[in-house]
Amino acid sequence: MNIKFNLLGALALAAVLGACSQKPADSSPASQAPTGDTGLATLNVDPGKVTGCDQDSWATSTVSWQVKNNAAAHVKVVVADPGSETANLFTEGGAEGNAKTEKWVQSGTRFTLLNADTGANLASYTVQGPDCSAAR
Image 1: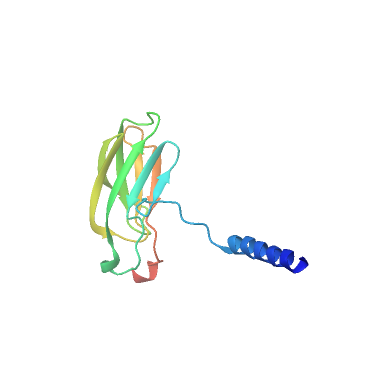
Image 2: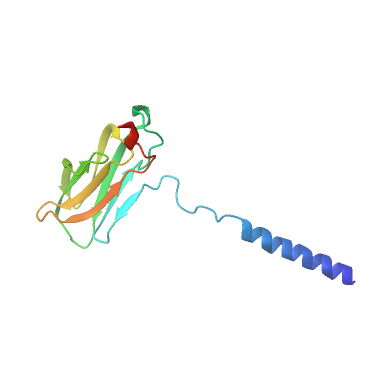
């Protein structure tokens, strides 16, 4: 009888330890876009990650935004090349919208959502990927 309880205890311990060593399942949807969220607005870039530095690895992305709590009625999305402080107008629109890029989005490309009236930064997102500074 003592062996039976020891065997049950060992099985229970193995089950607990096995559960502790497992990685939690990724509950996020596979298509969830990377997001910059400041509380004032959400800026999504999909895809928001590239896998390489060569032009074949660059992406065509959809940039979408949603301003919260009437933080701005008219916005601009500006984009800066990797390593550049200079941003250029990508698109503009209302408090909610989206726009598609051509195939020029690379690791380090930075999108910033601005209040068109005040210039205030509402949200930003930098495309993820390998460090390609040596390849530029």
